[in-house]
Image (cartoon, rainbow, N blue to C red):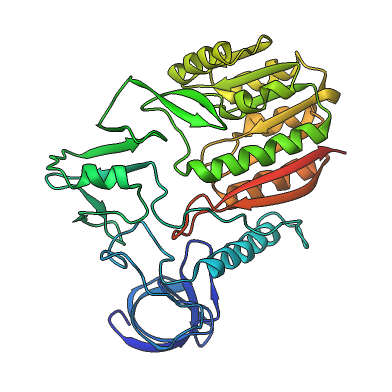
Length: 380
């Protein structure tokens, strides 16, 4: 019954951050708890197969429980794991990704390595989006209201300095800073900024996608460079390439580089960056990967081609997976911020004849339930 108070033993923490308890085999999802804890909860919603509940108090705490550092924690929807020691956050995410690959990917013993931790556990985000009207705020846990905020502990100091200024927010407002500490506040913008990545000044349209944790993306880039170098491929195809981050940072190892991205302003920046970095054999195409990947791969010697897939959270479009059933590059490096979609797509790639060599998770988003993962596949 909604409103009822119960005591539950938490047996696991699901991907997304909610703990799992049971009442006579009926699942109850509870946020801000840890496996092994006994807690008091209040039921807030009942569905046919499960219920959701709010945490009232922790009766028996886990030894991995930590004290949250944010005043808005458990109200703001941004973070789910501030109550968890950081090492245990990494262990939780590893287990969750293994479970996802078994359940969604159908892989009994997935080759998933330890989660690569973030050098910064707080103060790492180079971009936040705040909501209004009026004082800037974040969505509450159940997304029904906006809670005003004065400081976000996972955002960089430069962003918090802007938050401390008087800001009038309409529907939403983006605050973004680069590695040099320059800060912008905008709703829409065509301005181009510079980001330092691996010692190179990368020009990025202010409104285009760029990873929020610069320290971790550098670790992921170094990893991808090692994988590409070991593949002995001479051609690199970067699909869903954005401003061409992977193509540009791995391009010196390739004889020819291709990039595909539907954001035309990002492609313009990719071309300008390639020229500035001294790449001479490259082609960046503006358009959907679903439409252009087939024609791009047709230009390549597939036995010498490495394909990078870095799709949005929804994963690869069906035309992409269809293309990869017939045009089979030697190596695929699949970068994903959504492990369930990654496991879904890899299941189809395995059915098309690819071999999964390993998956390496990167903790791009400490204190949250999100995680980046890089999968390596090889043609059979």
